Length: 183
Image (cartoon, helix red, strand yellow):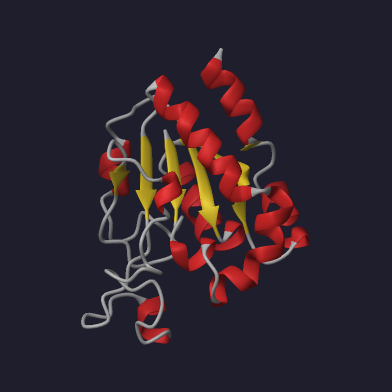
C-alpha cells in the first residue's frame, strides 16, 4: 500500500511551500519518481491512498489551521488539491485530516486495516514532519511502515538525510519498488 501525504499543489506547484522545498524536489526528482511509481503500482494492483491536509477556512480544526488562519491547504482551492499527475480515479482519498500525523482525525487507520500483512509505504511532504510523524504513528500501531525516500522531500538535503537515518533501514526508493512491481 502506498500512502501519499500532502502530495498537493501547495507543495508541487509554484508558490511559497514549493519554494521552501524546491531544491530537494529537483535534487531527488520527487514528482517524476512519484508519477513513475504510482503508474507501476496501479498496473500491479497496489492500492494508493492519499492523505491530504485540507483546511476549511470556515471551520478551523487543528493547530495548523489555527496558526495559519486557514490560508494554506484550503479545501476546494487549486493549491489545496491533490496534484493531478499522481491522482487516479482508482485511488482512495482519506478525508478529515487536521494534524501533521495523518492518523489524527482521519479514517487512515480504518482504511489501512483492510490491508493486513501489507507493507505500508509512505511518501510526501515534508519528510521530517508530517511524513515522519505518520510513519512513527503507523509503527506504533504495528504496521510495517517504510519511507519512499525519493518520493518525499523536506527543506534541505541534511534534514532529509537525518529523517532517513532516524528510520534506521526502513527506507526504500522508487527504483526498487518499480522494479518489484514490474517483474
